[in-house]
Length: 200
Image 1: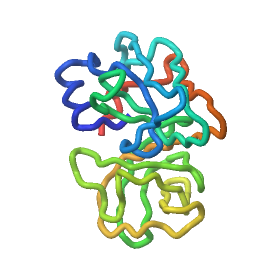
Image 2 (image 1 turned 60 degrees about the horizontal axis):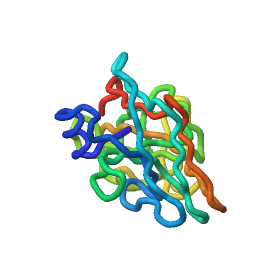
Image 3 (image 1 turned 90 degrees about the horizontal axis):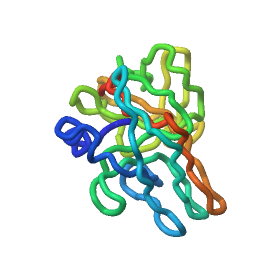
């Protein structure tokens, strides 16, 4: 779960006391789901163990018809308030990668487990900027996947994004879920992790 600056500050200052509600977004942290019966849901957290805290009960987020959810979200209030973080749905695949050379536009990430057409978003690591050509606000398609590297594209099976500078990144696979009719985004007990063993 990549944290926003607000989320990182709150976790350092208050633990998880400000991580109170879970919602859903139709993009990467800009547009929260709205309409129908949508409402953020209160979340409670288990005690920390092995640098990990999980939700203690299943979360059921009502989603209106004709909505595609890209990621889940964590907030500090039932409405308004601050977006603390967003998290991948439908997959637990994540990792770090390095753009070693701008030739080939490939991200090197040993044994990443991704396949072509998977959807991923990227985040900076260690306070560094993302390699030029990539954006944290874009959900990409995986193309050119090999065992230990992959490229990203703006379209399924499309041309690889032109990465023009070297650098490191964290990547997260998410599986967007389209609701043709009203339904629920369900997050199982223990499936929502605050994992400080994976720090970016």
